[in-house]
Structures are given as structure tokens and as C-alpha cells.
Image (cartoon, rainbow, N blue to C red):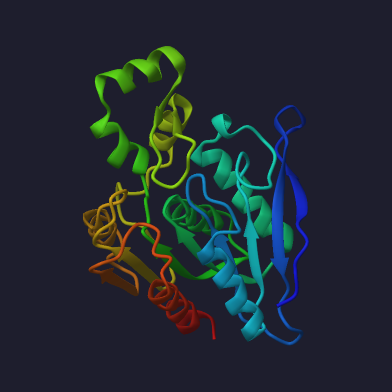
Length: 262
């Protein structure tokens, strides 16, 4: 598999522009299958195991694949503390539209699952290309700010949000703490999707570990209730964690991709 060079797309107005790093693999000439689009999680980047394996699958099957880092993540510019769902959604839409595929399969991990669901809403509003041919949501965390974080805030965290504009939390995945800002919390309420019927107009496959300490599997069941009109498959993995990056988990992801893309 040939090494890819990152390209950069400037997103946002002059006083708030940021350079978004992109890894784009074109389809083999003649292939008309949907482009695979990787949407990473909070503080994840496009070089993680699942993202790399998705790109490898695309290369082996002649498919187009698009990966990128949100602002404040990985190789992209921008201040992480300015990050909100609206901001990262804007970047995801800009990156996809810049490559102008006719159709896409959105593969969203954790927060990326929320971004994917919001992308479907925004793309359906505007109509035209690209259409969404499928969603693969891995340990999806839609509305995680309001549903998972805010209900469990300690008094100290509430005070920190009020006085400092953010609070810090120990991360299981990094030596640096997680930072959650007041702006992220407030913006999250404006982007909620678990409030009515979510009409995706495409097949949806959800992969969820039952030993996920970050996004409990009951959250995936709640999402399912908001997707009643669609072709939806939920795979519960009894011993699966949040990352779902083990070889058997990767195979499940690629099986889902294969069913939609080839």
C-alpha cells in the first residue's frame, strides 16, 4: 500500500480559518462505488488503527477513501479548546464537498458517529451530491455532552466550567487529560439528534461493545429507538470495549463496510 502525503484544506472565515489535514485515496479508475469517509472520535486522529485498516481495505478493493483530522486534532491546525460539534461538522462537510464524490459511506467512531448523523441531516437539507449510501457507527456517541457528560458532572467540574470555561478529566487513552469546554457543552445542545425520528435514508450498521466504559451499550439501544424507519443492524459485542480495535473488531467493521460498498 503506497504511502500517502497529507494535503491541507483551509476552512472557516479569515479571522477563524484553520488548516485541515486530509489523506485522500482516489478510487481505481472505473470504480463507481461510494467513497469511504472516516470520522474519528474526540481527541482521535486519522492514523488510528481503525482508520488505517479502513484505508487498507479501500486500497485492496480499489475504493476511494477519505480521512482527515478535525481542527485541534492530529496534523490539523486550530485550537482544540475552540472545538465544538458545529465547528467539527463544518470541517467534515467542507472536506467531503472539496472531494466532490457522488456518494459516500460515512464510518463514524464514537463522537464521529454523532458527526455522521449530523452530516446526513445537513446533506439531506442541501440535496444533490454527495448522497449518503450507508452509515457505519462504531460505539456511537450522539449527544454525548448532554446525555453522558452533563448528568454526571461533579460540583467541582460544574464550578470549573463556570469559572474557567472548561474542566479536565483523566484520560484512559492519553497521558494528557481530556478537556471539555463550556462552549462544547452549549453547542452540543444545539446539535442534539436523539430528540425525534432520525431519517437517514440509507442502511445503518452499529457496532457496540458491551464492556464499553465510555459509551454504555444502552446508549446504542437508545439510538436505535430513533432510527425506526431505516434498514438498521445493531451488533452487540459482549466482550467489546470502547475502541473496538482488536483484530476481530476490525473484521466486523470491514464486514459491514464490504456489505455496503462492494
